[in-house]
Image (cartoon, rainbow, N blue to C red; front, side):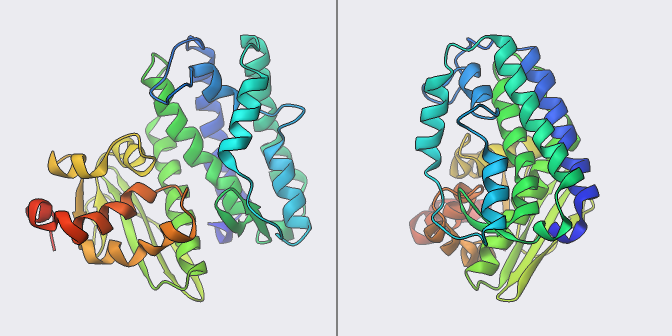
Amino acid sequence: MADAGRDEVGRRVLPAWDAFLQQAAGVDLSRPTRLPGWRAQEVCVHLGVWPEHTALADLVASARAGGTGAPPDVDAVNARVTAAHRDASRAEVLAALERNREATVRYLADEPAELDAAPAVSTIGRLPLLSVVLGQAYELAVHGLDLAAVGAPPVPAEVLQSGLAALADVTGALAAASGITGGATLATPDGGWTFAADGAGWTVARVAAGRVRGTAVQAPADLLLEAASGRVNPVVAVAQRRLRVQELPGLLRLAPIVSAAPGIPGGPLLQLAARTLGGAGGLLGRFFRG
């Protein structure tokens, strides 16, 4: 997706920010969410820009420095920022979210274009900086679903599709970095996204509804994102016929990515393949199409 350029990435990320800001403005921040120990307050706080938490600026600095160093410990970072601002007012929380959107706008408008393909050290490894910027769409879509579950407005369909685009892009990037030749389609009734990777790189493309070939995971967009993020157990979703996997061995080829980057988006879907073929295949095999 970095090759698609800033205009395309901006068309996906900025509406995702607008939708999330609308949700945050309309939800009771004191409501507990399905994330253990996190209220809507913590969900919003960790996505904001605070004096001690400037994620995008740190990524730009990493790209300028050549993308060296170890990935930050995302759990430790989140714990620090949420603890520091657990009592912040609604106005302060919304302002912090606005600052992060504004930081994204400034990057897309002002930073030199050569930074887009420069590697930056993200929480899941070295990725092109523009791919990390697009990755915001995945996080905003998933956390938008968290807020919708406690009374916020629903996540718009195109924001869900942007989240899937980011998921496909990151998974393709990590597959290429691991020297894996393979790919998959994230398919929904409204279309989806496909990626293909090898040792030389990866591609990402939009897929029209009903045009699913090869390895694919199929479900409504919200369920795909919830299964990819671990909000929904994908094994259970398959058993309930809410989620379908086509050509499971192709998904299994991608499973080693989880070992290289344990916290990656989509990890639960890749672990699904390993668990299913590793022992539950006899029980669940009838739910998969070869």
